[in-house]
Amino acid sequence: MRKGAWVLIALFAACGQGGAQDGSSSNRARFTFDCDLQGLNGVLRIDVEAVGASGVAFGSGSDPDITGIIATGEVIYETAGDLRSPTAAYTFTGENQYADFTSQTTFERFRVEWQLTGNLLIMIVNPFGPGPTQYTCVPTSAMYL
Image (cartoon, rainbow, N blue to C red):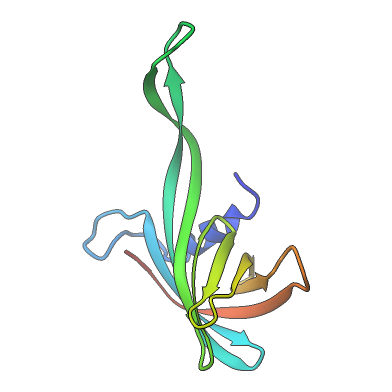
């Protein structure tokens, strides 16, 4: 399992047992958080989809054909969503514990790392520098899609 993937696994578990709204099983969920953005309230919405990774099987010979697809047992967590506050709006996409954010007004881009601490989601903006900044988010809802 990739380092940090446990964050999204824990988020998925927060939905509890069950499946999509129609009663079927689902590999997609939506989470909503209230975030403290240095005194401003922000609403973070994260859609998470669990995707099984796969590998390719090749035939024999010097120029082999692809003969099949094999599940590796690994799960990749694809994320997408938005963060809105009274002064800013961002959209993001990501994989596992990282997401790339884009400002909807200035088009500034930056990376965020997700960390789960107890029942809180910590957003670390620019985790590799310059100057990482942390914001705390409290879960408000979770549901399967």
